[in-house]
Image: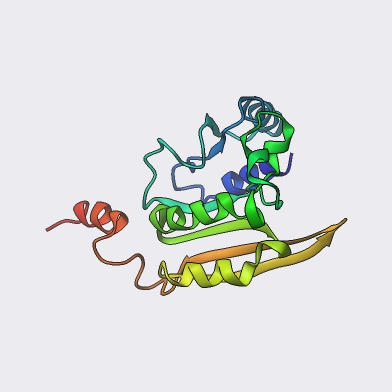
Length: 184
């Protein structure tokens, strides 16, 4: 219900004169996709649901204004990630970082020049290391929120381009796409 509410809030906050935002929810688990689809419909959020791993197969490089990811972040033995049951929803492999580490370079490709990306992680995932890795991708990361939920200390990390005015690095996909639409 949290994702559906979040997506509905994003859609409702779009300025009325602009076209409605394109909202996409992805998951590799077909049951999670079906459940998300039902929740989105129940909450009245118009969003596409896609069964995929992260953003595989989606052509959204350089156009994501707001991205949110709640990855499997619990440190587990790597073989637990290979299952097909409910455990794959939390099994994050070694240090809980398998998907997080694979996603970081994708974030830099997905973001629009003014884009923001939010990532859920645990204190055990070493968020300071994640933020430092983002610096190497020309992203500025910060802790947007931190709170204790039961036995978990959860953090929401926020990523933007290091210089919002500068946008993505020259020659990146989003600067090529946006540049091709300018009048000469």
